[in-house]
Length: 237
Ligand code: MLT
Image 1 (cartoon, rainbow, N blue to C red):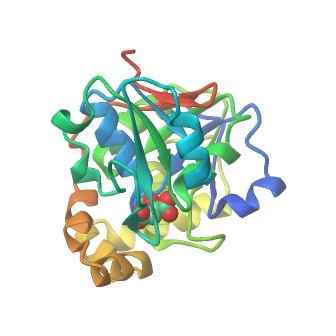
Image 2 (image 1 turned 180 degrees about the vertical axis):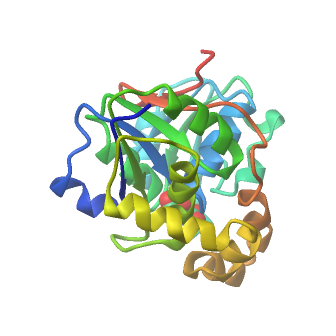
């Protein structure tokens, strides 16, 4: 059982509560952590999160078997192989490949958590696997929401609350309690919550409404991608 569970609503708050030495789950439900989880479940060998499109081109240069992926303003970047729609990351597209990924908030949050003891990548697709794994943790657990350009995001907080709701811990912070309450308000209508939240509405406006249904799926896979030495890999790698 974890000693404590905290929820950080945006990576901009991490300087106040550094992740060093803690077990972190990074959540960017729309859509980066959903995309990463599905890509790893479909056999991607590893994902290198980088901060900018220029970094992505540089990181992939001279690397074999590597595709460059991600978004800006929700859309695929010119010259990239894939955008940030999880359903693009099929077995055919990613199995056996290395991925260099840059997204507006998700990859930035993964970078910001690099000093943690361990960093898991979580989303509704692997919720139960994340919960099972957190049950084994004895130290401090922090769920870090990617948020949206420094501000709060409902969908990431609801996911954090779904983790809190299924875990016992010696101590829950007020942020964890608040996330739990928000999850309980939405647990029977996750697809509607994703459609109604700000980011969901923005994605629908640019023709990506199908991604909302996809990201709302519960326990589609049982992998827990984790970040080590700047790379996200499969637990079976
Ligand atoms: C992000 O990292 O901000 C996103 O995953 C944005 C998106 O593509 O929906």
